[in-house]
Image (cartoon, rainbow, N blue to C red; front, top):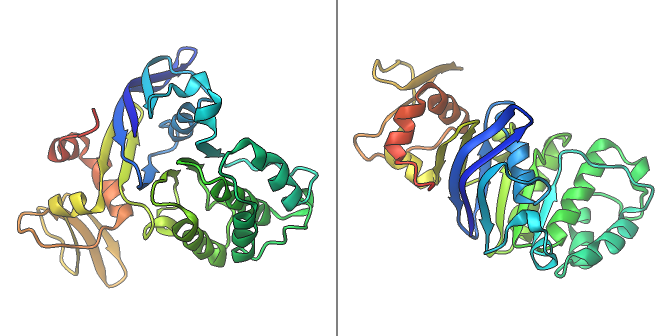
Length: 278
């Protein structure tokens, strides 16, 4: 389990994160959402031990990530949005770098590359950005780590590749694995991520499963705006609106509408969900 308590991080006098607390359970695929500049990438790098907290603590199965102990590092992988085009074939890269992860599976790497229709014998410095991104995603999944942190993994992928990405994550991620995926492309991952974390620079506004969200919020598709709606937006043929769920009726979560609702009613949402992050 990941336990974050009163986490803060600053670049000099510039505060990026302040008093962030939450827990991430095992075997879930978390979506990490937030406006630009709230510290999503910073949080991922802190979890991966690439930066040191200014104050507060991160505990991942009893490890402090910044200590970067080999037994910890072999169980995590951080996939950055930046993907270097090294002068190696994909298979040579995987064979060489995979040695650092105890459970790395070269056969699985080949399978995922095949799913992505990527050539393992192609040199990475001759790949398009999309091909390169798919190579790094394939490597990340083939490491078979318990914790996988992904920063904007669908950036640079075309529409078929985004579908392949969702299929690869579902097919090649073990039940014990915990994924934390930072994204602005919520429609790409809407059918994949659950629970949802919405981050603010000074707080966690929401950390809840889709089931918990629909227990308390109702997503209505209608032609008439309800005056009690917490949020409403025009869509072709009517509107999508979010209301308090006072009847217990189930609805399908619209993540974009949820995000906008949370940012419009930060304190209300925190109170509704009792912010079970500490």
